[in-house]
Every structure is written in C-alpha cells, then in structure tokens.
Amino acid sequence: MKKFYLSAVFLLFVLTFFMTSCQIYVETSGADETLEDESVLSVSSDELESVEPTSESESVDFSEDVSIHEAHVFSDWETKKEASCKEAGLVERVCTVCGFSESDETEILPHTQETLPAKDPTCTEHGLTEGNFCTVCAFIITEQEVISPTGHNYVEKEKVEPTCQKDGYTLFSCACGETYTGEATPKLPHNYTEKIIEPTCKNDGYTLHKCTACSDSYKDNYTKKGHEYVQTVISPTCKTEGYTLHKCSSCGDSYKDNKVDKTKHSYTSAVILPTLLDQGYTRYTCSYCKTSYKDNYTDYSSICSSAYAGNKKVLAQGIDVSKWNHKKDADGNFIPLDWVAIKNAGIDYVIIKAGSNVGIDPTFDMNYEGAKAAGLDVGAYYYSYALNVNDAIEEAKQFVTYVKGKTFEYPLYMDFEDSSQRSIAPSVKTEMIKSFAATLQRNGYYAGLYVGKHWMTPEYKVLEADKLIGMIDIWFARIDSSESVSIDQTYTWNPEDCLGHEEFGMWQYAHKGVFSFIEDEHFDLNYAYKDYPSIIKKLGLNGFSGESKEYVWVIVRNLNVRSYWDLSTANNVLTVAHFGDKFEIIEKTDEYVKIKFEGTEAYVSANPAHVSFTEPTS
Image (cartoon, rainbow, N blue to C red):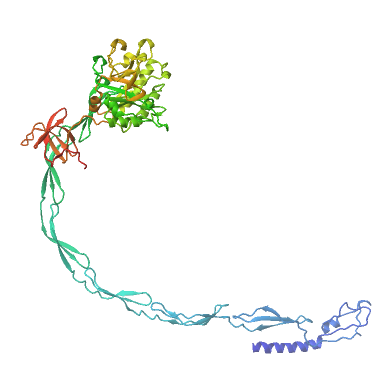
C-alpha cells in the first residue's frame, strides 16, 4: 500500500510538470463571436505550431488571454466495488479537465459476529465451549472446543423384596433415565396351610395345601366315597307310569326301576241338564289329569214328563198374584197380603208376577218374602211383550236378573197372552217360546209356559199346540166359572174341554177366587198335577243345590282306589286318587269308605290321615 502511494505521488509530480509546460487555458471575452460556453482547450506545442489559418472567419486571435492550468480538476470519488469483511472496496475519480482517472482501496469491513452457545456435557453426550462466527461470510472467529461426557451417576431407585413367586432385586437409575438391575435376591419358600376336603359320591376327597401368600396349591391324600341312594315309590297315575326312584341323598343322582303301568282315569261326573234347544249329558272328568268325555245324552223330554192333569189327582192348590191383588193405604203404598192366613186357608203355593219389560212388579219382593215366611212354595212369571225371538231372549235375561238370589219350588213361567203377539206366525211364536225357556234353562231354572185355552185351540191358529204340548211344562188357563169361587169349591179336569190333551202340569181353573178374610179382592186359583218342588230340588234348579249327597275328599298326595277292600294285595288297585279328589259316598265304616267310581263301586281308606268328609281348604 505504501509503495503504491509513493508511486502515485511520483507520477503525479511528473504529470504536473508536464502539464505546466504544455497546457493552455484560453479565455475569450468581449468578442462578437465567442464559444457558446467557456471552454478550456488543452493542446500540445506541436499542435499549436501546426495550426494554420484558413480564413478570416476561422482565424484565431491569439491576442486573447490564454491561461494554462498546472493541476487536475477531479470529480468526487465513485465506488466501484463495495468493501466487505473478506476484501477491500475500490473507489475511482476522474479529472474533469483531461479525463485522467485514479483509484484507491477502501478498508475491509469488520465481521458481523454471532455467538455459538455453549452446551453442557451429559452423562452420554459431549459438550461444547462458547464460540462465534461471522453471519455474513461464515468465518469462524472463535472456534468451539469439545467437552467430554460426564458419565452416568447411578443411585438406588427401588428395592424389591423377594416373595415365594419372584426373586428380589435393587433397581439403580441415573438422572438421564438409564437404569440397571443389581444382583437378584433368591425367592422365599412357600407358606402352605392345609384344608381337608371331604369326599362325596361324585368327587374324591383330598388334602389341599395352599400358600397363604401366592395361592399356589397342590393336593394329596385322596379318598373316595360312593352314592347313598334313598328309595321312593312313585305310584302310577292316569298320565304317568309308576316306578321306584332311587335318589342319592348327597348329590341328587338318581335312577328308576320297578316300573308299573299307568292307572285308569279317576273320573267324577257332572250332569248337564237338557234345555229345549240343547241336549243334556253327563260329563266325566278325570280329577287328576282333567281329561273328560260326555255320555248319557238326553233331551228335554226327560224332564218334561209325568205332567198329566188327566190323572185327576191334584197334588197342590195355589194362587197367582201381582200388584193388582193388593190394596193401597192412604199414602198410596201397597198393603201386604196376610200370607199366613192364606196358607191356613189351604193354599200350598203361589206363583208371583216378577214383572215385564216395563220393569219389576212393585210387589214382587214383598210377596216373595211374605209367602216364604209363611211356608208356602213359590214360583214366578214374566209377562211377555216380545215380538220376535231376540225380544224373547232379552226378556228371559231380564227375568233372570229379577229372580237372582231367590229360590223357587215351582217353575218360572213365560206369560204369553198379550194381544200384540196374536198376529205373529205360529211357527215364530214356537221359536220365541223355546228361546225364552232355553235361556232360563241355561241359567239353571225350570221353565214353563202360561197360555190360555183359546190360544191353544187349533181353529184359531195362534200357536202350534201339538208342538208345545209335551215339549214344555204348560200352565193351562181354562176358566170353568165366571162367578166368584171359594177356595173350598172343587173342580174336575175335563179333557174334552182341553183339546183332548191331558199333558198339563198346572191348571188355572178360576179367575175370581175369594178368601173370606180378604174383602173385595179376587185371586186366580190353580191346581198342580206335578210334584214340582221334589223335581226341581232333585235336579238342583231354581237356586237349589240338588239332592243332598255325602262326599269324601282325598287329603294325601296319592291314595289307592281298590275294587274290593283288601290291603294285603295290589291286584285290586283300580287307580290312584290324588289330593283334592272328591267321591260320592255309598257306605262309610271305620276302616273303609265305599264310593261311586266310574259307574260302579270302589273302596278307599277311611283313615282320617288319608281322607276328609268335609272339603279341604288347601
């Protein structure tokens, strides 16, 4: 740099000297023809000498002042290359007079430093000292030095005690997370306890040794045991065979042998009475399995029989009453009849009007209670306004509601005589009567028909008399006298006046019956030719329970029913009865009970531990 500077000075000196001797500065002032601008002309001496004038206009007037500069006139420095931290910059300037140029170097720029951070060493990785570098040229100003790893520093982290299942050990760990397991501590021995398991008929017995710490176990000392069977004799039934059951009392294991064939069904019978529309039958139901069948079919003729007025034997004398047979008191209330006096006068029964489709007769309950209290037998009738079969059925249903809860020794009658019904076809009337009666019969009542002589006369063609007679119990109205009739007066049946028929159960013979102790009142008088109270009670109709029978009930699970009484053999066993079975008694002794069984006689034990003569509650 110094050499370069001295050379430049020397060169400048030479040039200055040269320029002083050869440069000419020309100034023009006050001339008509001047340069557009002031100019500096630099010419050599040779050039001046060689100039020749050309013309007047082009001649040079050397009388003008001419000056010669002795130094360069430089421009400002111009940067040619920027300096950096790796090399110097370069600047240049030019003489504005002669165009001479010179250049110079600028100083190198300092580095732009950035720190390289230090890094601490770990137990597995190297560290570094702090350094720095230039962010422009990447020159490493201060180089980082490598620091060696520190190595692991292990400390005890966990100590695991040994058990009877696993060894013990100590776990060591370094702060960096690195671990290692130290030398193992041997497992501990098992701590066994003993439990004796008794043998069963299915499983062997043994001694169980079980560790209290880890549940490790083993068995030894095995023992055995067989089944302990208990025998139970299962009697045969109508559904299943009998057998002997051998069942182990310990485990429940079982097997069967000594099988016995099924027994016959143990039937109880129930009689279903016929109606005018339904056959009657006897239904036999097995008291054990409930299997049933029907037999002994009958029609209503089996009930509607032996009703003959023609035998001329009057069995009972009665009256029929309604609200029209009652007087009223001053308040308009019906006055009760003196039923005791009526009975004492010779009346055996009374047929009371229950009502019609208009409603219940207002004296029905009063008459029923009074007659019953006096000891009279009672029947009832319903005045019909029905015009078709459906009407008749609905009236019969209503009749049932009127008489519900009461008992009647005489039939419940359909009073069929209203004028509105006269024009109905006879065949339709027959069906109406049958439907009315069947509805009563299906509800457990003995049904009858009240009808007058003229409606039964063929020439009037009101009813199909031939179909009705013998089909249903008829209460026949044929009045022999229009005069007042005393209860003491007697009348004899005349079949010629009754269409030649005699099959009537009851005859209404008078409309104006009188009692000496009842003033200004008339009663219908009737004869009964059929023992209705006995028939109805025997059949269990009209609220009665039927014939009084004695029964025996089985109160054990199984009880043999034998064809004859002998306990020393099983050959006489007909079947096996079960708890709750009921049998009708024929004969009863201290040792056995003779019973009705499937239409024949059979025997069961009379032991109170086996049977009861009252129905068991459970």
